[in-house]
Structure formats: structure tokens, C-alpha cells
Image (cartoon, rainbow, N blue to C red; front, top):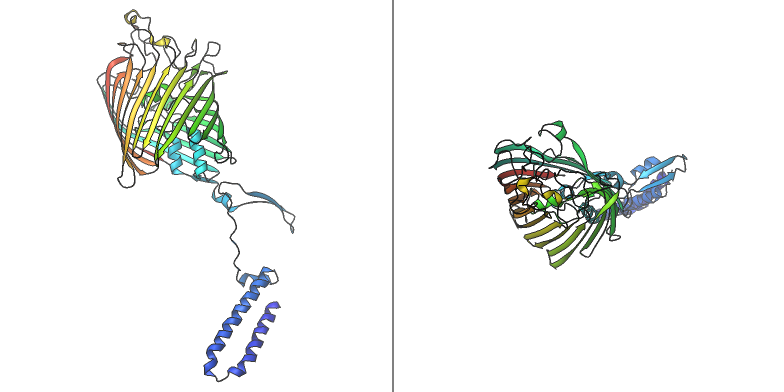
Amino acid sequence: MKFVLIAGISLLSLAMAAPALADDDARIEELEARLAQLEATNQQLLSVLAAQGLLPQSDALNAPVMAQPAPTPADAPMHTASHDHGAETGAHATHHGDDFHQNLVGVSPEYGYQILDHAEGVNTRALTILNAIESGDLDRRVTLSGNVTALADYQDSNSNTKFGWLMRHPTSANQIGETVSEFIVHSAQLAVTGRVTDSITLYSEMLYDPEQSFGSGTLTDLNRNQIQLRRAFVLFGNLSERPWYAAIGKMDTPFGLNDTVSPFTNSTSWHAFAGLATGGMVGYYKNGLHVRAMAIQGGAQFRAHNAPVEDTNVPSRVNNFAVDVNYTAALSEGRSVMAGASYTEATAYCQAYPVFHFNPCDDSNPGWAIYARADLGRLELLGEYASTTEDWAGTASPVPIYSAFEAVAPNAFTLGGRYWFDLQSSEDFAVSFEFSRFVSGDDGAPWEKQDQWVLGGSYFISPSVNLFGELIHTEGWVPLNFLSGGNLPTGESWSESDANTNVLALGVQASF
């Protein structure tokens, strides 16, 4: 009815103007202008009536929509739920904002590479997550991350079945003769990062690692092809609100740096002292200062920690801890220097002869570490030293032929450097060199030490895909199990100080 009224007003206006315009060619243009003005007026009236709900539905659908202010977007990661009781139907409905549906599950490839990388940031994953939240990389309720490291390598040893490259467990079940070659999946990971609230985050990581698994048998044995829950913890914190954070679960322990500049091969320091355990951690991060303290479950933990509980290796008591403090000083734009120190109440080096992983200890053997890293633009340098505070009883042997060798305090150190070049994009290709040593015996003992040199090349075809190559040389073959003997009928140690290994490794590490 109202539409008819509007149309009538328009026709009446035209009728009044028609006589004055008849047969007047000079005023045709004025008539067309008035028609355009009337049409615009009609459209405005329709818009007003539609906005007031005074038009029938069919007319309202054809009415133009007046410009409205753009709604303020909700924060992407937030769950915007509201409860609404419908006035007409009385129904109970729950509405989710569009951002919630669009950002429920997603991926962040650069974050995926960082959180699953085994070479850098190895014991600061909680901080990696917090920084990713602050930078907006975790703009989903759930972020899925995955990584596959595929490898082709050739190894040569001067001693039968004794290969010192620690990216594989040195076992004759998988390495026969004096040469080894393979095309292999070194590891595969799948992680879930879930943001429960702005300040509570869940993290869990599944790992498949047949080459470094403690399972028995060959690489194709089912026992070595299991998938494990490598890490899982609940993280409390939001760096944009406060500098404090806390975590509880299974995680890397805050001891040492344990990073490497090599694209793939971990340093000997990492193999000797990097820890993985269950416990609770608190941290502080602000203005370059990073402080962490972790209460660690006792008994024999997953890596690098063994604090006896009632003279057993049963993890039934929280009786170990680790503390780490480091500070990063900015030198100039893009350049910085970081230095830190760590202490743990119990390392893994506490068993008496014969040494075997996870065996009970009589007493804890504490450890300490100091480290530094410099980022000088294209050039990166790192150094680290770690040691126990007491001698490791198992580094001495009761076998008469070894009576001259005394027990020692195990130690490890790493020195490395890396330089970045521009290949296809800015700083996408790097050349690195690193030396690391683990000392585990007295001078001249077969298990005295193991050295490792790594020359590496790394090309990132994208921020989450790295093609790499390495030349590795090791001197010494010192498996920690029975390092000073106890597994051979003669009582001799199977460690060999003169065993050398050369390795050529090519691979790809790809993440999402």
C-alpha cells in the first residue's frame, strides 16, 4: 500500500510538469534531470521504510541497503559464544561468531618448523609457544603441526660394526661391517597446540624415530617402529599480559643450551646432557632476561636425569630440579649476544660399574653448564660447556687391565659457527661448522672421549622446508651402555678410542 502511495506521488509530479515541457526541445534535458532526481528520492524513501520494517517482505528484499558502519572484528583466536532466548519462538540458541568457525583449526608452517625442530630451541619450547601467541602465529583454537625428516646417508668406519655417528644408536643390530648406506625416514612428528583460553595452552607431540628408538631389533622390527608421546604439557601464561609463565607435564628440562648450528646432526653436548623429564616448571621472560626453574620427578627419567629414590630408579618422588638463567643483550639492529648458566641436582651419570641406561644409583651426581650465543647479522656463533660436579663411578673398571684408569667427572663442550648467504631470497642458504667433544673416561682409557666434526650446508626453499647436506667425522666409539665394560666375557670394554667414522648425509626436513 505504501509503495503505491509513493508511486502516485511520483506520477503526480510528472503530470504537473508535463504541460510546461510539451514541444519544448530546449527543456528535455531538464526533464531528464528531474526524473533522475525523483528516482533517487524514491530509492531513499524505500530505504528508510525498509530500515523501519514498514515494507512487505518482498518489497524489503528489493530495497537498497543503506551503508552501515563496519562491525568491529573480534579477536581471531577468541571463542565468541552468547546465549540468546528467541523472543518469538522461545527457543534456546547458541551463536558462534564467524571468526570462531574460520579459526577453529589451522596450521602455521613456520611455527610448526620451530616447535618440532630437533636442532635449535630444543629446551625452550614453552617460550616458543608464548612468543608465537604474542606474534599472532597461533590465531586458531587448535594448531596442527607436522614434521618429516627423510635422510640418505653413507657411513664408513675403520672398525667393524662400530659407527660413532650418534644420530643413530650405535648397535650391531642395524650396522654391520665397515660401511653403511640407507634411504630412511629418520623421524616423523605430529603435534597439537590448543589454546583453551588466552592464558592456558595445551601442547602434545607424537614421535616416530626408529633410528634413535630404544626398541630392540632391526630398523624394521616392530619394537623399533613404535609411536611415542614425546612431549605433553599444559602451559599457563601470556607474555602480552605478564612476564611469568608455568608448565606441568613431560617436557625438556631447563639445563644448558644444547642447540647446534648444524642443519641436522645434534652436538655431542646434546647427546650427553639434554634432558627430558616429567615435572613442573616456572619461568620469567622480560627485557632479555629469561629465568626458569623446574621440579623434576626422581628416579630414572627419559633423558639425562637420574635421582635415586630409596636406592631405586622408581620415579615415585619429586627429588630433582634444574635451574637456568640467561640474558640477551641487544648490540644493534639485528645483532645480539646471549649468555647463560644452568644447574641440575641430578644428571644421568650416577651408576657404578657396569653402566647401563636407567639402572638405579646410590647417590645423585649434580651438573652445571655455561653457554653463549652471538647473532652478528649473517654470522652466528655458539659455545657451551657442561660437567658433573662429582666423578662418575662407572667410568672406572674393576677389571685388572684397566686398574690404572680412575673415575672422572663427565663433561662436554661445543663450539660452532654459521654464516648466511642470499641464494633465491634473503639469507636462505647457510654454511656451518661445529666441533663437539664428550669426555667420559681417564686419559688413555678406551672410553676416554668421543669427538665430532660437522660441516653443513642448509637451503630453505621455504621457511618450513630445509634441504641439507653434511660431512661428519667422529673419533672414538663410546656407547654409554657398558662404556667401561661388563658385557663381554673377557671383562674388556667394547669402547674403542681409535674407531673413526666418516659420514655423508643428505636430507630434507619439512614441516607444516
